Each structure stands twice: as C-alpha cells, then as structure tokens.
Length: 437
Ligand SMILES: NC(=O)N[C@@H](CC(=O)O)C(=O)O
Image (cartoon, protein in one colour):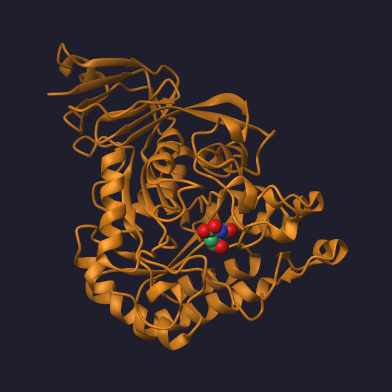
C-alpha cells in the first residue's frame, strides 16, 4: 500500500481540508482524512496552499519522434508535471507524423516510460499532414493509444470535403476533430497579426478573417454531419462571436484559448524578437479582452498551452527567419492566475473546469479531470498563488528556451503534483520515478 496525507491544503481555494490518498485514489477529504491515515502514510504539510485537480493540456507539442533537438517526450512531460499537469495530449506534427497506430503507440510508450504525466497521442487527420487523404483514424482509435482527438495542427484541414469526411468518420468512435483554423491562401507568407502594427513594422499580416472564415465553415460542417468539432487556439474577437452563435444554435463545438493569447498583444512584435512569433499570431488588446471575457463566460471551454518548443537557432535570428511557436507548460497556470483569478474574473473552481475537467471530457479520458472527490483518481496539483517569480527560460525544465515571458514577473508556483497518487513534483522540483513505482 502507498499512502499520502496532504495536510492544511485548500481544495479549490476554499476551506482547508486534509486529503488522504491511498493506492492512487482519493480516500478521504476533511477531518476524517487524518483519522483514517495509515501509520506509514507520507505526510505533506501544505498549509494555505491551493489544491486543484491535476491539469490536463489538450494541446502540447512534445516533438518526439523527430524533433528531439527541441524536446523529447521525457523533457516535455517533465516540464508538464512541473507546470501542474497530470495529462497532456501530444500533437501529431512529429516526424514521422502520428498518422498511424505504430507511431501513436510509440509516443504512448515513451510517455509511460517517462512516467511524468499520462500522454494521450493526438492522431493526424490526414496522411503526413498533407491535407489530401484521411489518415488511419480507425486503427489509431483502436490501438493501445485509444486515440480520440485528431488534428493536423500546425496546418489547417483546408479541403472542405476532407474535413466533412473526417468529422463523419470520427463519430463511430466518439472522436473529435481539433482544427487549426487558418486559411492557408489568406496567410501565405504571413508573419504577424494584420493590423496597424504590422503595417508600421512592414511585416506581412495574418488577417483575423483567415481564422474566422474557417471556424464559420467548420461549425456549419459539424452541424451538417452532426459531429463534434474542437477549435484550437482561438485568438480573435470575431472567432468568439462565431463560437457564441454556434453554441446558441446547439452545434457540438468546443473552443480553446492559449495563455499567450490571454496576455500578450501584437505590440510585442515591435521588438522584432521571434520569441513573440506564434501561430495564430498575437492579436490586439481588444481581442485579448474578448477572449478573456469568453473564457470567463464559458464561450471558450478550455485553456490549451500550445507548448511549441523550438531549438535556439530557430528563434535566435531575425523575425522573418524565426519559427512559429512558444513554450507554455510551465507558465500556463501563472498566466491564468494573473489574467483571470487575480482580476476576479474566475474562481479556482473555474480554473479547474477549464484546465482539467473539460479538457479531459473533450479528449474522452476517464481517469483524469474527475475533480477532488473521494474515490476519484488522485491527480492533484498543489499551488502557492502568493509567490511571484521572474521567468527565465534557461531555468525551466523544458529542453527549449523559447519562452516569451523571460524577465516577466508572474504569480504562482506549483509546489507539488500527484499523478495517480504518486508525487511527480515536490517542493517545486520534479521527482524521478523509482523502479518500484
Ligand atoms: N503554434 C505554433 O506557433 N507552432 C506550432 C504549430 C503551429 O504552427 O500551430 C509548432 O508545432 O511549432
């Protein structure tokens, strides 16, 4: 038997209550926890700290296989655990692409061996992400990886016939298509958000309509075939309007926003530093306000990090040559605290909903996101919201340093993470899996 007693902790930021964990499940919460704790239980004094259900990231790039100079499954999932995550959905734009059962099972196994979080491989929608023919979706769904989320993320499924077929096909195994909404024709050569700042800087623009027109098309397709659509990294106020309209109409759509689109604007491009180059691009202050409001009112369902590590040479260069993407696993919760909790827009229960419960539901994962309830799997994140830390890329656990928050002071630190009852992070630092675990 393994047992842990978390004392003095505040579940969902509410009244202090001890939590007893036995053999991977929450055995008791409240006064009876200490009374029921076996003598050998490991005790953790977490007075005044906040307990949340383990975070679930619906949108992570782990890069392995093929991109190990940026990240491996091991380093990416270790960074996830440090960020408070207990599960991540690993995007399909690896090399080889996660478009068949062999590759998704490889990523699943790498995740299990690393042991930091549950890794759920995302399957590509199209073979080789080429947007021409459907991938082996059924084989991936039926594989050991039990894939339910399919995405060509990094690329848009542009062909409406392919998108329609994909939406139809995933219905048979309750899957979802997670679309990277970007009209490729409207964004050829685009470098940043199209607007006053791009005009001033002389960088080619990525117009909001390139995102909004694809979302509008896709919600109508999802309605037409009666299937489930997930919109990745929504970034504009117009996109929020479309999702609001689609939901009011009863369309089965969910939407995600990234931490960086909740905090940063296209003004950052004035530095010409590719650290701020990301896809979709950082938008205007009005867009940031719209996505914050939509996350708070439930129009946007989840926060996905879009953790996109890149090797230094792809970021330490001029803007035009830089790669799109920024790391995010270790800064997501601090940014949510800064933008949504400290501002009074969301409670800790709301954070649990958008960063744990709903992402697990969208991905059809049953042993995550169940909340801090007796009998639930003991996936628990313990955070100190009062600490303020200056972010430094070099001291993060991800293998890459492309954080746009370097030098910024952000609130909150994950003190401990428990994955199915086993601590993966204690005192803010990762804890290696032992052989007997
Ligand atoms: N979000 C990003 O800016 N980059 C992503 C893929 C993508 O372009 O969406 C990546 O894989 O690097």
